[in-house]
Amino acid sequence: MASMMRSLRIKLSLALIITSMSAVSVVGIITQWRVSTRFDQMAMEHAFENFQADVGAYIDSYGSWDEAKKIERFGQFVRRRRALIGPHADEPFFSRPEDGIRPAGRRLTPPMPDEPEWAPPFLFILLDPQGKVLLGGGKYEEGEFVPESARLGVSPIMRGGQVLALAIPQGKPNLSAVDMNYLAIIREALIYAFLIASALAIFLGFMISKRLSKSLHELTIAIRAMSQGKLRQKVTVHGKDETGMLAEAFNRMSADLAHAYEQLEESNCTISEQALLLKELSIRDELTQLYNRRYFNEQANKLFMHMKRYKRPLSFMIGDLDHFKQVNDRFSHATGDEVLKAVSGILKNNTRASDIVARYGGEEFVIIFPETPLMQAVEQCERLRKMIESFSWSAIHPELKVSMSIGLNDDLGFDRFEQMLAVADKNLFQAKADGRNRLCYQSSVDLELRAGML
Image (cartoon, rainbow, N blue to C red; front, side, top):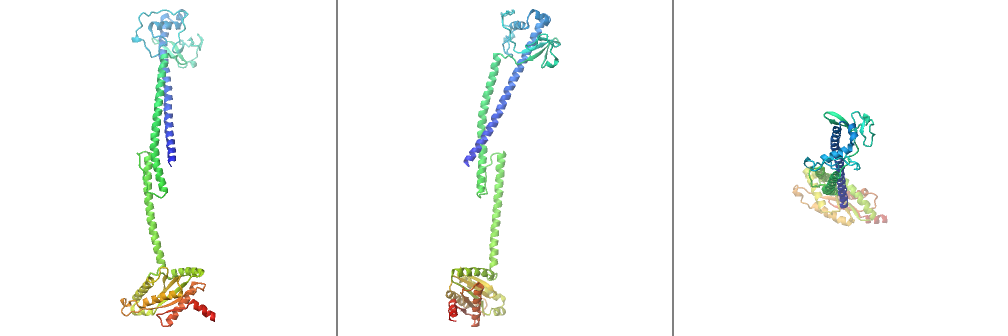
């Protein structure tokens, strides 16, 4: 999990850093482009102002362009004029002579024929008002006519409200060394700003990704705990952003899910308890709380088949209360119910936990003695018979006396348990015929010997 969270943190950091540096790069490129464009525009505007002043002065000095051209070339005139009023031609467009005053001792002198041509800071094509070329700028021949469709960016040169000529800028300005230095300083500032912004973006990217990954890490741990069954989880809410809202929603979901699960568990426990109670009620006799006949038959069949298969001893007992109808008729049915309860208590409390005691119907009771040979069952049943006979029945009614006749069988040679129980029932009838309040049985060994003698 730690490696997964580190991977997530790295991905978040890279995403934030790349986004931030991309934004910084775009801002830097746009700023550089805008500064250069604006610088060129300002240079062109300033050059046009000077060019307009030079053209006006050139025409004013000689009366017209054609006359001035016969006397002095325009470039020589501009150099001479710059020497008189300053600044020099190679000064930057935003430079100004000190205090606007021409330096002392400077005088207007015509340039020497062998002096190099002056390079203007910006190249203009000059047309007369009708569109004829006065200065071609290396693109048009002098005297050539330029159509209006080709006059892009044309600017009029005015004098006293009259258009003297039309100027069309060409190319980019010839920046001076000072101008280039200014641009270099601006570019350097942008580079430093880019580096600082990049460092800040990297720092903030790691900090923000760490904060985000911390919240996600807590959520991941909580979700893993929920998957292991610990439904009630709570994570720390960091702020009110989407991550915080997610944490709050998770806490609510966890609480609701845990509450629902607890209620479900309570319902399941209640249902389980009720199911056990219903099951117990379905196998118990309502009056005596002994097992009922249906449950006895199920267990008798299982034990009979098991003991017969593994040749283990098994004894069945069936007992019947003597003259129980007279008890109901003489003392009431309520007294009869009390008798049945008392007999059930004696049978249940004086048998083993492995023995199955049931009310078979009316005043009949049956007991299964697993892993019990017949003679051991005889001793147990005889003890039970005597306990019933000697019970203090006078506590229920002063004239009440109760006894039980019992039949036993341990013969596993039958195919079904019902046959074995029928023999025990036959022995019960024999006990009643012999005078009641007695135990009657026939040993399976005796029966085998008798069968052999016959």
